[in-house]
Length: 403
Image (cartoon, rainbow, N blue to C red; front, side, top):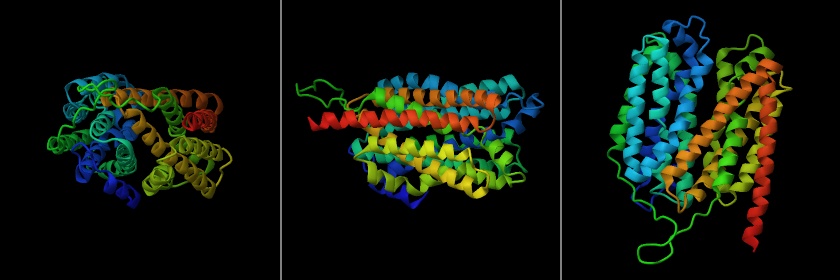
């Protein structure tokens, strides 16, 4: 990862038994387990003809199937994690991915492959499980740094995984690569089994000795609303970016298109650590600013007709993506204080996946009705609305602190 991401790991020390190396190991496990989940879906149009869908018409639906079922299952698994242990449920998520990848690689029909993707979503959920595990051992800025690092692992996997899958395709078909990729979450589970079970946090209310336990501080309603708005406004531009670029830049190289897609995520990897340092004490300002840059970056796609203007638009979106993801991690760390982490992060995952699914559905509808620029303009409006909400929440929060 980048120097900025490495800076985060250096300071992610745990008050409850997780040291820097252990936090780093958790991030590495999430990175490798995400490879198949993030790297293989872009190749569905190449996989489905071998399963009976000659023109790959089901690719769009199957692309979001794991997301839907991951969101539906996350609150359930989160509650079980609070009851039976975060480490156990994190291991369950990694092993669930292993089983589902094996089933997907062995599937010989479209229904069997669909069932494997459903299981991937429902049995996986490694991001929520990982965050719940960390939140049980870390708090405050230490937790927000670790959550920011987890986002860095996700961005790195999102950039690297499709490249690796494409490079292996001449020797192993993307369909059978599911069998190979199953090794990764299995390896992650073996490594995670060596880590400790974090101590259960004290619930809000009264402690065993009659004292007052730590009360929840962050607003869940605000966190969930901003998460949904941010995910919706950023994801909505993803499905039709390639068609937009190819329509504006005829004959553009596929590698260039891929780099344009990856550019915002590379911005995160380069700058997340510094952004966390700058905005750790003012996340509401940061998320409002981030949503503003997201709106600006999305709007800049509309007049873009050259490679330079597309690069500038993607860089603006990258600034917004970095500010937004980092500050959402800080807000999540605030909200986790005094709450059961499994349930909270399971619910947050449900909201996040809901935003992603809504973005995909709306993108398909507006693209079909108004063309390839419609999704980015819709995302602009959504980002501006969420930015206004963040500004209002910042003002309310400042009023409370001044009393």
